[in-house]
Amino acid sequence: MHHRLSLTAGLCLLGLAMASTPARAQADFSGTWGARYQEDFPERIPGPELGDYLGLPITPAARQFGDSWDSSRIGLTEEQCRVHVSPYIYRGPLNLRIWEERDPSTQQLIAIKHHISTYDQSRTIYMDGRPHPGPLARHTWMGFSTGRYDGNLLVVTTTHIKFGWHRRNGLPMSDQATLTEFFSRNGDVMTRVSVTRDPVYLSEPLVKSEDFSLSTVSQAPQSFIYKCKPVVELADRELGSVPAFQLGENPFIEEFRNRHSVPEIARRGGADTMYPEFMDRVASAGANWQPPATSTLPSREAAAPWHPADGEIAVLPVQGHIYMLAGPEGNSTVQAGDQGVILVDTQGAPVADRLFAAIRTVAAGPIQYIINTGVHDAAAGGNARLTELGPTRRDANPPGAGIGGNTGGDTVALAHENVLNRMTAAGPDRKPSSEWPSETYFGRRTEIFLNDEAVQVYHPADAAHTDGDSIVFFRKSDVIATGDIFLTTGYPFIDAARGGHINGIIDGLNLVIDLAVPDHHIQENGTLIVPGDGRLSDEQDVIEYRDMVTIVRDRIQYMIGKGMTLAQVKAARPTLDFDPRYGSNNGPWTTDMFVETIYRNLAN
Image 1 (cartoon, rainbow, N blue to C red):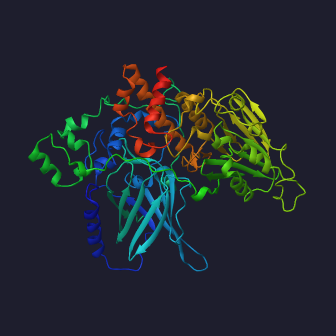
Image 2 (image 1 turned 45 degrees about the vertical axis):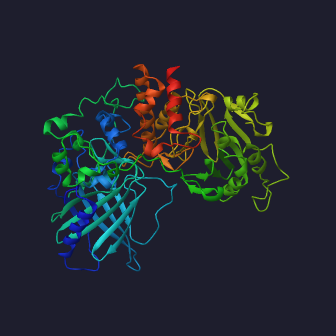
Image 3 (image 1 turned 90 degrees about the horizontal axis):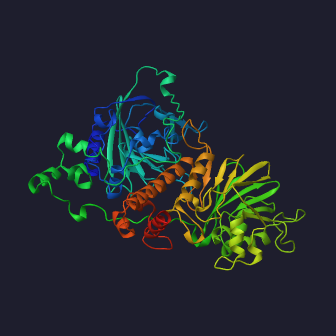
């Protein structure tokens, strides 16, 4: 079955295939499988041609991303070991081993396991009815999968997938995509039909299928091992650069259309190009035919960031001694241990008591240190109350009963000196002395040692979100709290009134990437990242965000160099390919404000 078929047609063919198979309670997919490549061979093995978007229901955002894609981007050291995500990885060359995990006492099926030789990926499909994780959970290459049997058809639902590809010629798949798979077996042939829904880069579900043959010979262990070690490929490449073509200036994008005499309206893809009647419409109306306005989704605004209901605080274990506490003002990070607590960011006075109660669910000791990653209330607004609540008498019973009677004086509030300078100066940031940091640092770095762990606090080389940003690295736990330099919920807020600058944002993101080390075996895990707002992340999530911010910065810089005005830059839509994921048309920080701030940062 060809991937350009509609969802309805694809599933009908699957149903016909299943009807020819004798019904069984459950199909057993255990064994070693090799891929067949009779379907979509040019795309799956030689690789798709640049600019070929035929038959894909892509959005304008996906098209702009693909048209500006420069394949040398995967030559960056941090990109070389990128893994194909679960909706795509089954398309290419691979050996696939499948086995069942059963309860040793009851023999009930717990999970179906896949080991994929490409990138040495292990995938678990839970069959025991467990729920999918919440919105704060980390995303992975394979995502989180649950399955159920519908007769002899295995139906799998996958969420929490990283950013990846719909087609590996630059057409992106967002981290908001979900995957539904249908596995069927007919003798020694297994068929996988996948349905990918992506609210950012697809206007309709994308259906694909692949067949696999059961191997009758034992595969050598080496055929399932894949190791990747990134190296420096270009010694003269500027540190932190992200290759991408400027809008409308990709010299290779027309090669596919010219080589195959494909009409431009067809090459550009879209939902209409999925259906057989498309070419009849083009032939009858001419090459200038345009799809009806209702055939594609309108421009989509990014989904509103998720926060706990009613101002509550959600607690998420990270790793080591570290917890992420998500609230209405963003995220706090807690290091908990026998010697007490380090708290990164206090989320504002209105939620201080609830934040303290959440801390007490994971730690009973005193709050020894508060670290403010910036001057805003989300970072420092709860300083006074948390300093008051935090100290706990060591002889108190229970241990958390130190509220009142022993307040103040024990907790150290630490921030960059520019935070204190703004809090003590006349102006909108002036705060009462009870909210000031009691210790400051200047320059690039300071450090703390508590609970048998070294904690390093970094200041970006240039002003970033503000001129007082801090990044906190818990070395033993291998966790970084970024403050508002990195978010998963929107474009970075560049507070120009408080010294913020786009180049500092990029410098801060590159610092996080330099500090983080992934598990190179699978190019995830390793160092985990707590963003200023949004879900728990790892280095690859920061890389995607850094790439996005750098590409937008470079586009606007290029347009300024061409003499374009702010109005002309906005009209060129330099953020179109990222707006459905990060943009907003309302609220305190809109896409227009993001573009305007970058323009003014760079034009001055």
